Image (cartoon, rainbow, N blue to C red; front, side):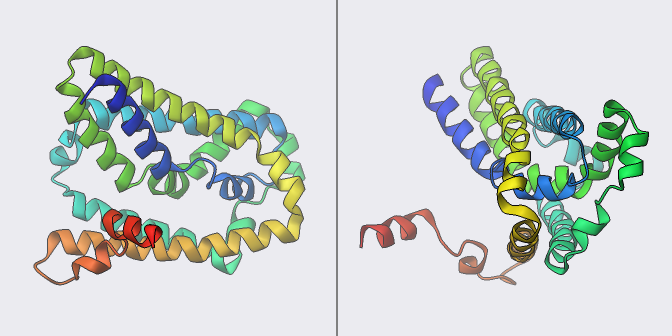
Length: 238
C-alpha cells in the first residue's frame, strides 16, 4: 500500500464511521440553549477530545484495552448499551429536556465556563460511543498497523488524517445554528426522534457484533453483517 492510498483509505473510513455531518442534528439538540460562541467552543472541546482519544488508540493499538483486560467484543457491547440509552432518550423526546439550558444558567456562565460544563455532560454518550465508537477505534488500530509498514511517514500521515477529521467535526458543528434555524423547533424534534430510532437499531447491531465475537455460533453471520460490500455492489449493478 502506498502512502497516498493509505491516507485516502484511512480518511474515508474514519470520516464515515465518525460521521460529523450526520451528528450535527444531535449536537444541535444537545446545545439548544447555547450561545453561538458557547456552541463553537463546545465543538472545539469535543474535537480535541476526539483527537486525543483516537490518537491514543492509533499510537498504542489495543494496549489500552489490553491493560484493563477488556476485549473489543466487550467494548462493542458496552458501547451498544450506552448508545441504546441515548437512542431511547432521543426517541422519547427526553434528550431535548435533559440537555436544555435555562436562560438564567446560560447568562450566569462565561462562554468558556459554559463550554466546559456542556462538554463534560456530552463526553458520554455523545463523545463516546456516538462519535468515537468501537468502529472508529477499530479503524484507528487497523490502520496503525498499516502505517507501521510505511515507517515514520506513515505514522505521521495517520495522525494528519485524524487531525483533518477532527477539524471537520468542528466545521460541521459550527453550522449547527444554520441547521437549527432551517429546521425550527418542530423539525428538530422530528429529526431527533427519527435519529433516536436509528441509534437504537445501531446499538442493537453493536451488541450483536459483540456477542458474535465472544460466543460460538450464537449470532448468525448475516445478522452481524447484513449488507456485505460484495452483495451491496452486485445489488447496485442490477
